[in-house]
Length: 41
Image (cartoon, rainbow, N blue to C red):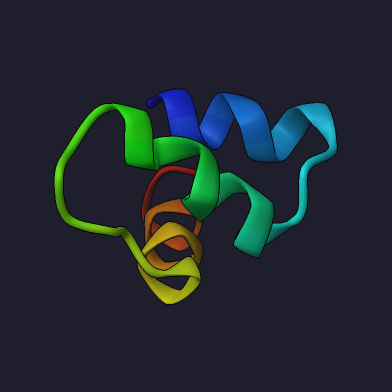
């Protein structure tokens, strides 16, 4: 949900995926963020 919040605040997909690194050890791709937007947006 935080990724959706950041995206709708105006961050780009790649910036949003980089901001999620603090929550997990593995990286989330910008494509994964885009898929979440398509599902929940």
